[in-house]
View 1 (cartoon, one colour):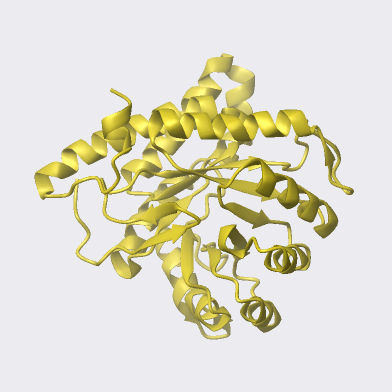
View 2 (cartoon, helix red, strand yellow):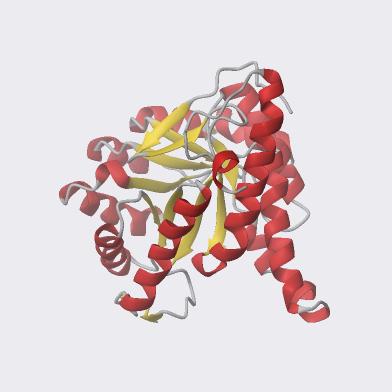
Length: 306
């Protein structure tokens, strides 16, 4: 257990606090809804879906937050702008939680960001994401909309090792750094995603969390669940419970590397992820007391789950 020498920033996004020293705040859990091939979506181009099931998934996040103390953000995914806007409108009425505005390209995400600004949801919307494809036009539009929060996807195709995540944040010749892009865009709340590509890369992403927090003090995390989802031999050669064990294990690995948030995959996996993450947060918080660190919220898992 440790305390970072660098001051650790904490951002409050619509009441959800993310960041800080290990043991101060619970890990924020981000589950995905309306993602590609999500069974509740009947028409991904027009944004048609089973509203009753969607609402039940969202309400379960709220119940698990009450049980564990782990705050949540919703990852709202849309194939195109029309669908994404419909999903956002639904989610904004179903819960007061913040949400990621998530689409496959800036051309999909930007109209949705414009919509959330127009309807007064800007304080809850998190642009997902600025990455190595970022262009001045995207930065300029975010600035014009006065977007407050964004994810920085620290994937670096030129250097896939842990240190490469730092390089893409700083920038290099011919490539605008993501921190510079965020500053020009006027983004105030920055969440750094250290980019998991496959199961072996979970270790590199975990180390990068430590490096980013050490150098920049920003809230940092990643999404290991996609790697588990695409692990074909796990599904073919092991019994069904192994999948859930590995999903929880991948989350624990990153929390032990001091992640402030985790994209844990489909919201249907909340029952697996929340108890495992709450347990890990409680273990870290208890050990951190030896270093003088205390939880800064009264509903920390340390006080909730035992």
